[in-house]
Length: 324
Image 1: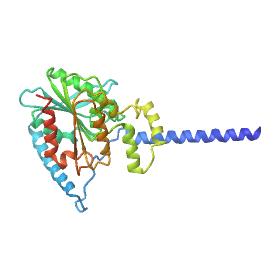
Image 2 (image 1 turned 180 degrees about the vertical axis):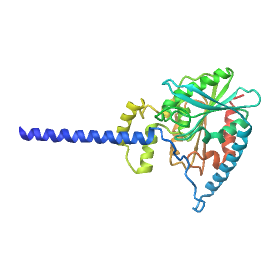
Image 3 (image 1 turned 180 degrees about the horizontal axis):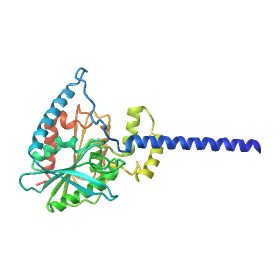
Image 4 (image 1 turned 90 degrees about the vertical axis):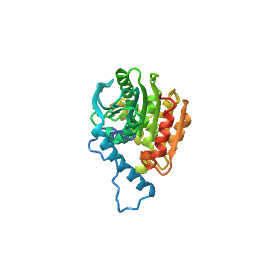
């Protein structure tokens, strides 16, 4: 009897230690990946003395030109800052760029993970040059917007619906395009499965992921060589409690199956951050009018910089079918 009690006590202690360990791991991953962090570097510095591919040099040159063009544009364009209130009471911030002459063409551009609205200003400029008014929100828990927990697109899809309503309040005849890069790409895809107003004419997603679960699985393996179990399982429990969503439900793949809005899927052919294979599954899953563009030689988020001519020609020829 005494021996049995000892065994039971040992088992209980082991289970408690395992539970505490998993709770620690889950919280650590959650804090690392999903709690707002200030001062994050979003682009790796390029060592000019290190060997670079031809594509990398082209990308650097195109990025520098984009920065110069954006700087000149910002000196001239009429802008306005604005805020909306999210469903859970957060002040969300956005910046508007207005055409000189009235137009009903609008684009809402969603930036990526740990990025801010300024990082997608080169995209904004290209749309502006095609006659669009532009809205660039800072996503929740990023930039000037409030929020402690990163939504990975799932919480952000609800925010995007509110930004759409905001544009409709400004212009009831608006023709709206949704554009997103990386987490922003996941955001617009996740938004596509919601009940959208007919004013939303088309969606462009660049290098978005299939689901939060698969995204984190890929990152665990790529960065740390670790399997998803039990780390992601523990982190998902913590996320469900603290951020009120789980990794499995946060699925762009499932949302695009419900989409009725025409969608262009774009990706870099050398993307190891959000694996390129994801874009093909997303494209196949979509039941709406659709097209796809993969820029060879481009890594994560660099397709518009590696081959801007091909990229933007595809984007605006696609939009030309749906936006007057």
